[in-house]
Amino acid sequence: MKKLLFSVILMMCMLIAVFAQDVPEGLYNEITPELSAPPQHKWGDDILITNQNIGGMDFATDYNSGSIYAYQNTSHNSTSDTCFLYKSADNGLTWTKIGGIQLNENGDISDPEIIITDAGKVACVSLNIETTGERVIRMREFTDTTLMASIWEYPTTAADTVIDYDIDYSDGYYYLTYTVYDASGYWDICGVTCHEDSNTWTNHTNLFDNAFAGAEPRISAGTGGYGYIAFIENRLTAGVKNIRCKRTYNYGDLWIGSVPITTDLSGQDISDIDIACSKLQPEIVWTTVQFNDFSTWGYYLSTDACSTSNYEGVIAAESGYEESYGTVESHPVYGWATFAFKSDSASNHNVAFFYIDESAPANVRELQIINDHLATGTYRPVAGNIMLNSAIMYAGWGPTNLYFDTYANNLGIDERIAVNDFNVYASPAVFHDETDIFFVMNDNSNVTVEIFNTLGQRVWSYSSYFAKGINSVKWSGADSRGSNVPEGLYFFRVNSGSAISSGKIILF
Image 1: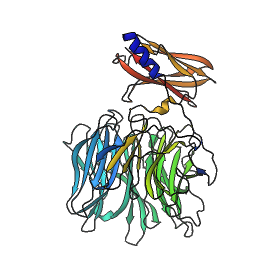
Image 2: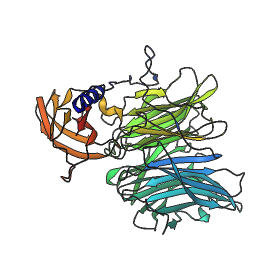
Image 3: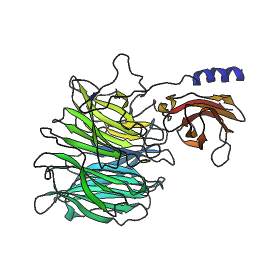
């Protein structure tokens, strides 16, 4: 009976989804999903986090523990706004309300953002808008396990009069950008950084004078001290709105002169930008932008640290309808970028998704509409990632419920690792002592073999150079420290740099 059970499980595990979708490159291309066959929908039921009156939202993942945190503020008509924190320990399937993190008894709270550091600290950030007119950024930082000994930090002061801000994190540093309305009536772009072990914000500097009125700067940080700030300006281009970028390669100690991301956009009404660099290859940068007064949405790509950027085309999940409000976020461990945007159809607000691997940074994959509930046309859907999945958060409409969903049906394992770009298999697939993971190489290359548990946590990995032909790597059921892992289902992934394939194995 036991052997029969394992045989049945083995047959089920061999059913691996296969997909790959490349898109044409070029100027002003409209990128649409393949319509000749229904898409392979790998998104599960949207999970309701809360049905409070949403005023803003964000989420982040602790890549040490696998926990996911959602942060949202409630809107109370300009009085006593509160930001609440929620936690999921099961890949977003269930959520626990931790409690109120920030309370403003004298005005609004807006733009809640959350950062989880490499050390497991949780940083909750928001813009407080006081009834006195002060507009200041506040951040509360605490550990993964408790709210005790929380640290309040003040990246800006009341004198800054913050209009809008964005924050990111990499390699132990927070990177913050914001817009201020100065005494001369100009909109200025500012930047400031802080190490996570300090509560002193340094390198506070004015990065660009007289940006476009209402400019909303966006920031992204990569490894090695790379940081990028994108913003809209119309001063340097004779009244034509364009996107420019300020860059740092040394953790904000020095920001070099701004460079254009877009070229001449005469006649285009652009807004709602976002930017993300690959966390592993920070020279790869994606910048998203909304064109023509909320009608189309697309992205630019740079592979040389924003020295130059190429327009890749508008994105359309539903041809002929409005595409807008896009966000992008790169995975800090695996480097892919997750994109989310609002895609209308017949006056309904939907949420669309796609992702791009850094190995092919212009190729859109899995473009599809994913929301189970009607979305609002007010709030941007939030693109992000959990352990090995892309994930999306969005506000539902009527009332503004907060929903969360992940790629691969909340299983905790990203089905993208089952792409089968080249032949891989394990023998035996059901084993007790050890198994061999075989893969067929078309060329000589460095290869990484990884083992993941069902929570999406990597338990073992091996990297080496392999020759063209059939190769194999042996796994004996131990983690990277040599300790035996529990019996159960595991996933393996083989990455040659240019191709990725995977499969499932059972240890008993």
